[in-house]
Image (cartoon, rainbow, N blue to C red; front, top):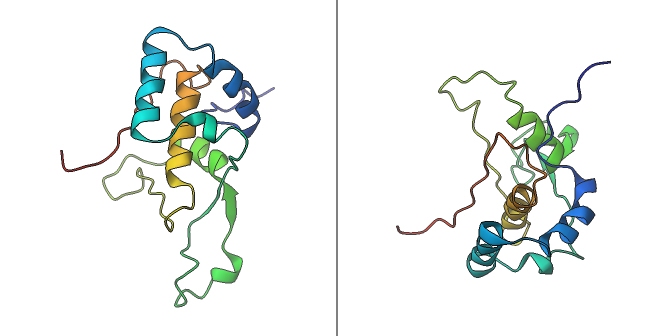
Amino acid sequence: MPLEALAFVKAEWAKQLWNKLDRLRGEEAKELDRLRDEFVDPNVLKDVYVVPQLQDRNPADFRQDDLLIAARQSAFERINEFFQGKLPLEKDGRHQMFILSDAGMGKTSLLLMLKLMHLTSFWPQKYSCQLFKLGDD
């Protein structure tokens, strides 16, 4: 039986995640407070979060001929594939992932969910997840 692929995020972890958030102590609780201050209170997401679908085509770009067949994939599935490192580490952009969308489409919420999974120990132990708000400094 083949080994299960390394999972960084799974949609079914969300329910367990909310239960673990309430029990965070020490440094993890301080980090949760920082996330509340800089981003949004994660409890706001508890009842409304929907895992976004990603695609590698811009649906607003009418010049692309293949928009009708653009494959969509759960953001969590795509992130797991990306973090498993199956792409060569060449400096041509193949090892970088950009998540682009219009305002209010869930980019920050997705990144916050990644960090929450790290804080609640769903993230693989040998990896770290850091979330920072970009600004002038």
